[in-house]
Length: 104
Image (tube, rainbow, N blue to C red; front, side, top):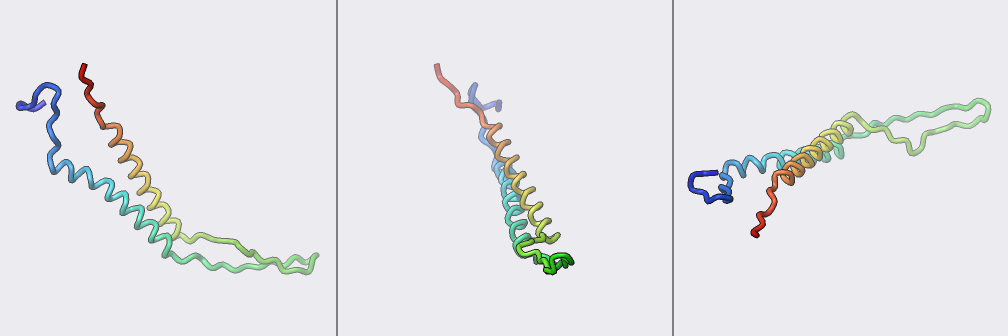
């Protein structure tokens, strides 16, 4: 308690503390957005393949097969880390909330 506070009264947070508390969600949101943009703009690998089945005399192709490029994987990981940071921050903020004071 501060020297000018009444018993049960809490001091208001300083502006610098409020500004530093806003840094974590902003960084998390920036990581999510950057990861999504990076994953979206990464070129997928074009891999064409075919197989010959000698007994059926047919050529088998892989229609609908999708390969994820390394750039897309990195973007997804960055976005996931941003989401984890936001979830940690939200849990921390909820856990730090003080219960309302009840008057008898």
